Length: 410
Image 1 (cartoon, rainbow, N blue to C red):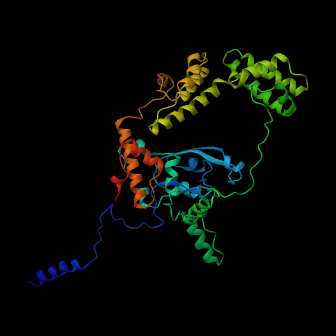
Image 2 (image 1 turned 30 degrees about the vertical axis):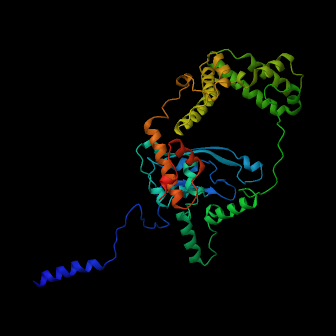
């Protein structure tokens, strides 16, 4: 009897305890700063651009090879609005392969990537694995919208504790350009009409090209080209000519004319009239090797796949260029209909050449349309929950599916 009473007393004592369960997702536990879900890119509010330069250090160190990045010249550097000469052009991370090891954060030399320590980083459930392929816009979304309030890197804590232990000055705060203070400062600059980026120096004057493009006046090129540069160009074209000979193909007349032209400039002799005319008429495509045509074709096909991933029709001009470079790559004559019909087909239906161009997949399949709608609804609900306006691109997708903002109000 006494034992039964003790058991009942123990049971009754649990009624006075504070509940440990919550109603997820309406209620969420606060996450620690060290929490990490998936890697995301950091947005530089001082210069209004990604902090990533596309250096590929993280790509080379990724143990599961889930990252891909490309680099390009930063146009804002010439405008005096950035101190980065190079900037990331495209960035992809396959979250389905990522094992969240944090190595990319540790090796990044530019404080450009962190592990998302918010609930938005954990809520990544999808119905299709392909929806876990994140591009540059997806990876910078959390930082651009001010969700990364405390970007964290483990090395920062180590450096701070070591400095305190040695009695030294603590290191400066990291990710300063991506914190809420920097975002607020950017909003204040925009309100004052100064623009989103801080001007570091006056814009650079456009540089005069040392070499005129194909089709420009031959005299301008002769005056600007030094013999040393002419020799470098001649040697490059001669290597392309040897590639033709190695394949047993005749060297194009335009390529031979350009070699003769640069040889004459190198030796200080007058440029042969025939060589000058042929070089000007040949243009870039006249000396385009199959290897370069293949590279250009693959780049355009990646752009076409990006259109498909966004559920947008591939432009007819892009399909025409893909078919043209494919013909050059295979040594076939460029279809006249492709070059002539490209401008006229802009804005119309996609031509049947899409299959020949190598573009596959249906961006308007029910599954992909459903995924687009769900992503837009989720982004709209998150913006409304933060008390912010729904982004225009999200609203456009909702309007496409006939969904009103009022129906998503909490």
